[in-house]
Amino acid sequence: MGAAMQTKAGDPGAPAHFDLSRVDGTAFGFNVVSLFRSPRLSAGLAFLSIAACSAPPPPREELPTLAVDTGWPTIPAGTKFGEVSGVDVDAQGNVWVLHRAGRKWEEPFPKEPIPEPTVFKFSPDGTLLAQWGAGVFVMPHGISIDAEGKVWITDVAREQVFRFSAEGRQELTLGEQGVTAQDAAHFGRPADVAFLLGRVLIADGYVNTRVAEVSPEGAFIRDWGDFKVAHAVAVDETRIYVADRENARIQIYDHGGKLVASWASPAGNHTYALKPLGDGRVLALEGRDGADRNGAVLRIYAAGGTAEAAYDIGLPGDDASLGHDLAIGPDGHIYATDVNGGRVVRLSLPSRSDK
Image (cartoon, rainbow, N blue to C red; front, side):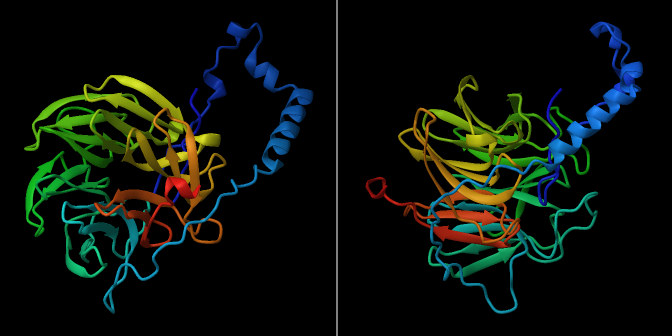
């Protein structure tokens, strides 16, 4: 039986339920109902349960911190971020940020779209160039920019994936609004999008357990994988990387969808986003650790899957940050979103010679 999925701000799960009334005790040589009615055993189980609950969690991983550029971006007076869920960078280095203006992740999801703009476009220096997306999204999640400059956005409440022009004109809608299914025409809380030649890869998602492939015009091609919250997908010249979040691992495939490696996150940490760094190296953003505590940790994996470095980029205080998405600019700047902190930050990784 799988472990219970965790319910966290911005990232829900359905707790596992173990129903003793459905267990056939004869398979174990005893009567389960009678066994659990034993006063001594009940007392012992109660003691063990209390002891387990009272055991302190392991200490947080001690990591060096990375400074973020506190002057980036420039937000006009009267404008502020809500929960910042997604970020990507286009070919010109402009930074696209997706946020839930004035809305927090709460279930059941509301029906009404967010009335304020949810898509911000910044120049590389942090100047706000454009904003749009008002009255469109209910619970926006991921944003990805393709090679043609088209903007792809997932909405977990609407169960849909959208393609927009850079100016915000809606060009394509995939999925049926409000309908959840794992088939060629529907999604199950789609989370993220990545691109290969002639293929759009959709991490699907919180409810579904797959990567779905469609053409750039939305024709279904195939699906594959078996994930427990496929939260992010990214590609390089030879590999596809999937953040298999609740299985606490990164799954690596060739471009044909064949599994070639599986990297377990240190101490059961949960990877929310990832991006290739080149030469087979991968940058991952962990939003929760193995003890299910929120945070924002950047971790660098070597080509073979060894964790070679890690840095804390979270705000001080428990649950102050929830690292959620990553992007890398053509100039090497790293952009990370923080749902709980209501921010997107820009930073630079130390050079490998600095370690």
